[in-house]
Length: 116
Image (cartoon, rainbow, N blue to C red; front, side, top):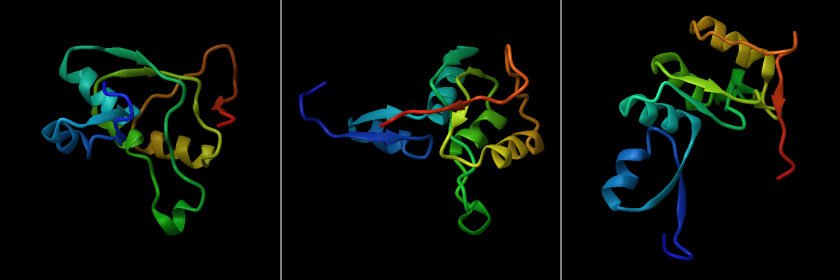
């Protein structure tokens, strides 16, 4: 990659445009799951997944990660959802969409935290 090149956040919505432009993109969990399924990768690991944002009842702000987890046959191993999100609503959304959620070594659902 060229030094100083702009790198765009690429969810599944942005992938075709970024690829067509030959631009640089950093994949989200949604786009990584989509690409993984296209090339036959069944499992991948990431820090944390997106989820339902706080205040989503009025903003409808739900990460595309959750939609992709529902429709793509790829298992995602992660540290949980990002801790800034509405974790109970995220779990409810995943349950409603039929996405299995498993936690190892704990009865609690973990949250992914980053200081930056």
